[in-house]
Image 1 (cartoon, rainbow, N blue to C red):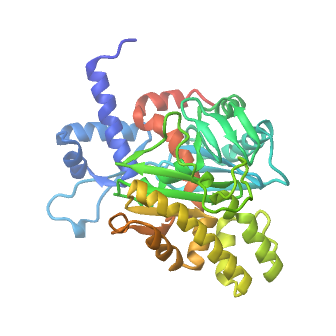
Image 2 (cartoon, one colour):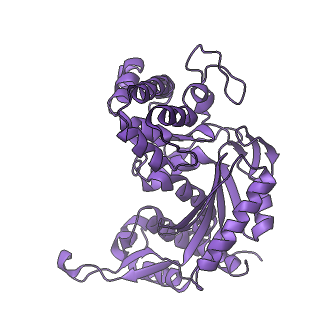
Image 3 (cartoon, rainbow, N blue to C red):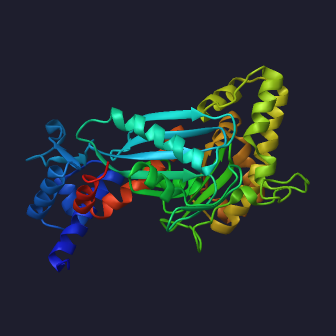
Length: 400
């Protein structure tokens, strides 16, 4: 069917309103009028359409804080949800994330060893099935997104190489779509983390930032430049974990010696906490690892934190000199070691970065905490809804 110009304009206007309340938060009708340049009656009609679709809700503002006739507040509705998936070498995590940014429910399924792609998909599909049974009957499931610790071809969700998982050329998005009946997209986990922090976390309102995530499956990075995610030619940009930071001969999973991923590892932290504090943190969440590091008074634990932060500073200083970001955000166990010694990393980066490049630079832990990859993965699924609200709701009504 050929789409008329009127239909195309309406689709783009619906998209603009839904995208704004999703990423910038609830807004009054008058604010939406200013943001979009559309007149009040058009905004009212578009908001009514989105409300009928179940994508937004309207509420009355606090009358005590307004002058004159109050304008209704438009907020993302609770009916639209997406499934988010994050496979790692020791766990598969699946969550339900709302369009309002709320992680409604999350299941972390621990594994003894890294799963094959087929096993990972089967596990994720089972967990999605469990979570689907808990959804409200009127929920609008728009699809699923996968945050993968590896190189992902973004146009089709093919995992080219996830070394810790030992996955090579696995059509992960297609496999999970076939297993669940939902539209599925996949991307690198750290790139999704960068996007999530930019829209909903510490990077809100900023145009240039770097996000580094440390997990059981290694270290990855995401880059935002000029407000846009930098994916590179095929979507593989941001592999900070494979940047050389020392002359040590120890190689990472890609066979490259002396890299950030070879020197800075979650396993070394867990080993030293086990040896000196008697803690068994196998399968622990990032928050649990951070609490253990903060509580430790062992000199060996403190020395290991300092050693890892020193190598992390080398990688970050190089990125700061090349990219000149406003903000560096750390997630996973990288956030944990930074929290354990918050003054060391900024000082070490400052000693290695050019003066003008470090002016105004902030280094912080991910504001979204352990939910960051779930929120980022869900954004992959929500994108189709944000681009075509009416069309995507119609498509979702026909899926399982």
